Length: 478
Figure 1 (cartoon, one colour):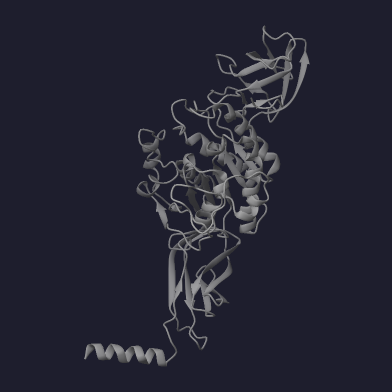
Figure 2 (cartoon, one colour):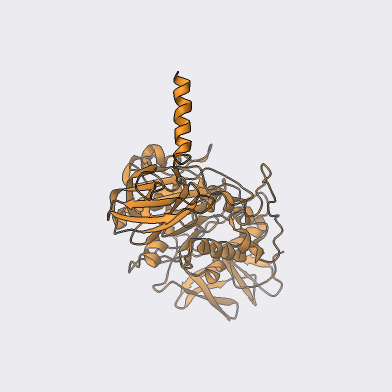
């Protein structure tokens, strides 16, 4: 009898209009999320084909409506207020008569504030708990204050795909020691400090994968415009363990593209160190593509320079990769680089000091994105040189009050003559910049600073921000 009643009920449903209305949302749009404040943010999902979808936002009790396409995809834009919350959003697929009779989903504990995307390879992915035998400096202390309901964390699971994915795996979590311990140490500390300074909710989205090249994070259209790309594009599948071009964009950027954000944080480059000549153009292509997908060509892009390390392979090309990262700021508007020359480690490619990197990325955001006067964000940048006998005077930008020298003096400068052989040089602070010389070079032609894979940088401006490695020559890499 029970089975008969079930069959009769199914028949009545079919007779009265078909399958039950349904609505689904991607993982990035969920409970506990942060929406970018005072902006038009996109919300999207799936419903039945051609269904009417309505969205109600609790902060203004306003209803937004749209119609799904023939495949059931829908998207609309809602307006967000000043920072605040918690709020709710109700998503409903309307009944066939247009009334509020369909299935609905209500999301809760939503905050309005600032949202940043953190991406890259292992140094961005590295969690506060560290890697095996590779700790994060002061991690336990950082975690004691990680319980902050105004901070929300979204951690995308790794996913490589031959085609752009609609959804990803992950969930928004309220910040706590338990959720932060497995989250990006750089991303979390950036969010923690930003929230404390601004006093508004902050959401951070981690989408990173260790050991990955920048080509994998770039969409096909943007990457195809860069000449000389040799890494293959995926066809109908992504081979296990082989991260080809675009596959991480497809799996870990496309599912969140368009979600309302303030900007991007990026920490990557080690996987491209064997091909430094392409890197600046590749970064420009990736950022241009991301901004296009978000529909905003001025989204801030702040990135960390690869840190000094005693590389077992491709060591000679590492300084040229850093040089490409420095030059990328000239190619990419609204960008800035956090220099890492003084916080590397000769023992590990994953230096434990992620606090300094997070702070230097934060300085860029505070100075350039949030327009805080008085905040310095950039260290000395080589400008020009003047040769006087056996001495070279280097002048710099971003050192308006001069330089800082450690007690042991400068140790990272080298000088060469026409034979292109570099010798260690002495350096001192001069009225016009830094004066460099070597007893072994009578007629200097070029100067290099910290131009090695492993080095401990020691040139700072008076704001305490370091200079990147640089060279005055343009000689081809050996």
